[in-house]
Amino acid sequence: MAGGGEAAQEKRHARGLLTARERLDRLFQRGTFQESGMHAHHDCRDLGDKTLPADGVVTGTGYVDNELVAAFAQDATVAAGTLGHTHAMKIVELMGTATRLGIPLVAFQESGGARIQEGVDALSGYGEVFYQNVLMSGVVPQIAVICGPCAGGAAYSPALMDFIVMTRENAQMFITGPQVIRAVTGRATTAEEIGGAQMHASVSGNVHFLADDDEHAVEIVRDLLSYLPTNNTEDPPHRLTGELRLDRDEGMNDLVPEDPSMPMDVRAVIDRLVDDGRLLEVQADFAKNLIVGFARIEGIVVGLLANQPTHLAGALDIDASDKGARFVRFCNAFNIPLVTLVDVPGFLPGVEQERGGIIRHGAKMLFAYASGTVPKFTVILRKAYGGSYLAMCSKEMGTDAVYAWPGAEIAVMGGAGAVNILYRRELENAEDVEATRAELIERYREEHATPYRSAARGYITDVIDPSETRATLALGLRKSLTKRELRPAKKHGNIPL
Image 1 (cartoon, helix red, strand yellow):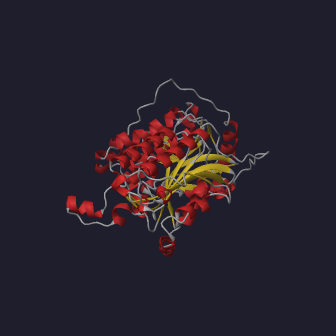
Image 2 (spheres, one colour):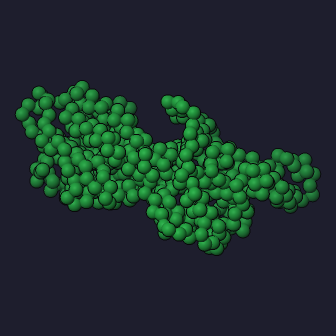
Image 3 (cartoon, rainbow, N blue to C red):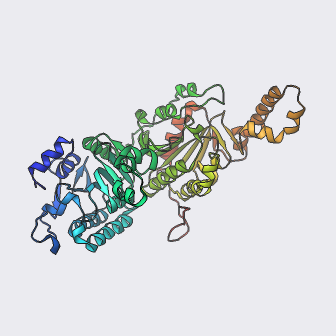
């Protein structure tokens, strides 16, 4: 129970770290955790009779807000939390239990990587864990909490899970550390630069949630679990009320700028749209031009995606496409309805984007949405141009309903760009070029980009007043809960990874 001993525990507390068992105590309801494999012992000859309490990992099940959850916590006070064969088998057995019972898995990870003394046995153990991660994917939710160093193979199991929570201090995650990088490449670096929490949250995109400390990380895990079903055969924990509130929200109308060229902060729309203005945002510091997260609308759990015009004008780029596609696929795997708020000028232009593979990455959004069979609702707030109109879940991509605000623009491109192409000669011969351009842009918007034209062609379900948005979505979501959609039989599609 003491792991590496009281002295080691005191050192952790001095650094603001909890022990492995304390982390599990904070997660589970008091008295509900049942441990498995407490007396497990290694069989490594190189370690001789050396005792490694619980072989460096605490495993078991318990209740979180009255829902059963499986969890393990690596004990860094025992052989630096390194993974050996017995350590791995304890984790694999717990993963099998989670799969059989259909319950989420939470992993508190703090490990020096493979236990060197066990050689290939340790590598084999990692392989067993990775294989189980993949088998569990899309079956039960998997949440990793990086709360200390995770080096080498220790970083790959979290990468195979659905969400990663990482503490700002004391935690790093990398494949090769600063010393190896310097020896191989000659470049000096630090653990924070290549593996710190802020870097992973904002640059690499590996981390979904940042936590201030261990206690905060547990709070995030509990909050996240409150939106998720226990497994892929269950519905998410909707909080259905007897009577729907379908009042108009006139305050939503006040959010729309009079000038269509002025950006609108979509967070203000989200605040009024979702219950209590509460959004659990995922990857908040990564690809800020696209907001994704979990919320409720009249009690219905939804996965929400929204272009953010205050960052890169809301355009889709490589990172935003990856972020959005992965979120959509998670929601689809776990029966979470999707709500998409569209205000997108296109895919981000640029040499770096083209050379970086924006075609391939942008196609992930198309693939993810088209593959989705959960209820899907789209609201075009202001603009939806070109391929990004399709990538943000248009009717053609299988959404159940598409609504548009009256001032929305839906077209191949924006008015300014279209006018420069369509009316080049008129502009060249105009006495007042800018006045003529402004007049032509307005005419283009009224004749070609208006949502009523799209509605007349059947591409838009309805044109709604902004004040009707919450009521319209709440009613549609409630009606869609019995949706069932079959697809052609196949092993799986081939998403453009």
